[in-house]
Amino acid sequence: MRKSSRKQVVLKRVDAFKKGQTPLKKKGLPPGRTLESVENQLVGLAIDLAREQIEKGTASSQVITHFLKLGSSIARLETEKMQRENELLKAKTDALKSQKKTEDLYRKALSAMRSYTGSIPLSENDSGLDEIEDDSENF
Image (cartoon, rainbow, N blue to C red; front, side, top):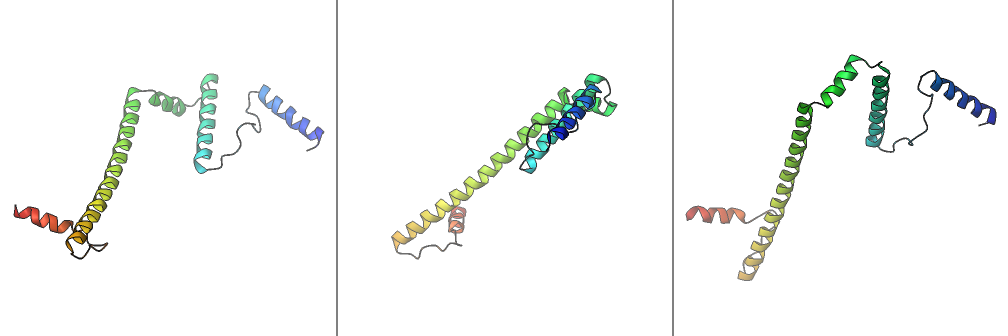
């Protein structure tokens, strides 16, 4: 870029700023590399724009209502509820993984015990847990 064209771009930005308009191009963060980072940058820009509009008194009723709802106690409770539900889902997922590991340990233990008694070890598909459940029904 030549010096004169760079100077023109800077002058355009200064003029736009003086008129209360947003600059043609903001220097700041580099473009996001992932979809999530791009989304976060866009949300940040939208919030900045909404703040400017509210401060200048040019915000639409939808923008004002949106931020009023965000600040309400009901919105905070809903957010907390969603966070708790996410924690519950993670706990259920962890419990299922743990159950699978436990079943694998039982399968290996039964196979080892059968090999000690001279029986044929369990195959990968046979858990041996069915026999235990059948035996427990007899008691």
